Length: 229
Image 1 (cartoon, one colour):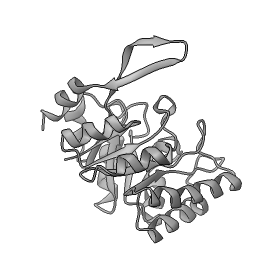
Image 2: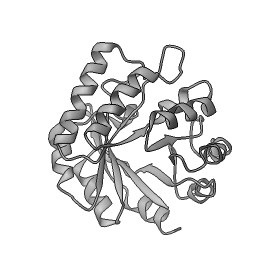
Image 3: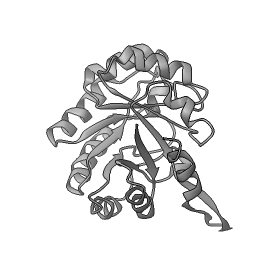
Image 4: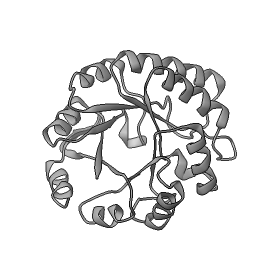
């Protein structure tokens, strides 16, 4: 089983190295599902050669619908992400009807492949109207993997759909389950046959003020999940 940590800090990458985790998804603003992180952070994290850095490519929170000028920014960001030393990019574009935006995703994936970057279609997938049709389109576009909660609020609730996605994909794409993964449900999620499991590794620090809540690495959560495998 492959594990992927979802992190927003250099400390998260160090934790991945410590626990011998193959890869991380590097984001900013995890409280809104993750946004594109700073290039300087990507560069620093990429110096940890034992861990693959897969970078969230999402310029704004809210929907996964992007105007053409925003798409231009995303395309430019791919160059910067590559030059910063990342292994892959994580993105997903939808139409106004919550269907896969073939044209936009194709433009992004073609550039990523040209730069030898791996591609993950993120949980925008879980907001589409027809998961099986969307899966087939994502496979046809050439994505390396799909991150999904099975079109539900959490991966635990979406176990049935995740099992179906694994079956329908028939090894054509890596299926990675994520969202709400913890030590109590990780084995049940793994039994769906997914190739990988994705989870956050932070917890809220008790010290806070009006400027926000600082997160720290949750070593207990990491150990409680990994020790089951």
